[in-house]
Length: 486
Image (cartoon, rainbow, N blue to C red; front, side, top):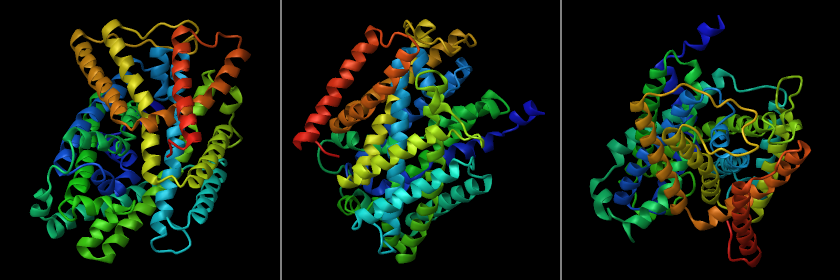
């Protein structure tokens, strides 16, 4: 009976799961985010590049799930298999921190939106907002520690809550507010086109975070072909929603006006078309969407820690579960770090847009190295062999045909080049702060290796650590001198 249930998810169910896990709070701030860096023409080029790049990344994880079916410890397990224990750990640690920062960003956007209607919180009241974020975070931890997860009903409600306002926005703006003359007035924006395209790259990646989750559902699908179809259908549905919201906004307000909007810029655009009720509609959809995302991501952000503890890369205690089956130790550490991040960000008056860019840089690490692993698999049949690495996982899998291998190599190269270019396009400040953020992970990692009487680093890993120390040190120095800030 178990097997029969596992393989009953239809292609349309998979499409719905992909859309639900990908479309989050980012779409509601997209008009302002994109317009702050690019005009309509450059934005179209940026979306085209992102479409090819993010689809290739989605297929990287789908292909790896087929080629290495036993690597089921999250996205970091592919990096570990390809590049060794420490690089895999750094990817998992970075992915976890990205999720933590995303949590703070979600909550900030939520309370800033609420503050537009309720005077007690919002942009002008950072202390009250920080307290509200903290209370929400610890309340969710208390619920999750009891083993209570989102029910299917809540998932359905939050998905509908965010998709209906988005659909209403697209229809109303397209038919009532869009002006072709305004859209083409300053079509290429100001400044070099390449600079504008680079400026929106992290934002386009941010709104696609979660598309890699398509591979998670492969075990539940009726056929592997359904997963491929669902990936394509789900991806292009999400792309259509994102591009529609982003590009239609240029036909309502000028680039300068869009760039000056608050974080919930989608509400402001619709309000300009139909009046205050339009802004309220989008704000309600955003709040329900963000609340649903906050609960699910706070639950999921503990998973990398628990998985790495189970794999022996972190202290075993972090993988402990309570009587309700919840990984309470990993959830507690995640909640504490979220609380610390809230304090740091609000003391430094860090904007939502900066949180998005820093979180995206941290998410890029497993994307880049997972793509590299697929390239290595397609080119040489295995990852880079490292001593003292990979003793706890099974990286066996089916042998692909030569034609499939060539296709996998092409997908891997596209994803690798795209991910590398994203690091190049990112503001160096966020890359340096990303390095600084992952450095504290050295402490539990080294302690765990020493406790297990294992070699801490090989030469390759030692070189990576040295590079991280230099980059993190530069960030710390710049922060202390006041030359760098978030």
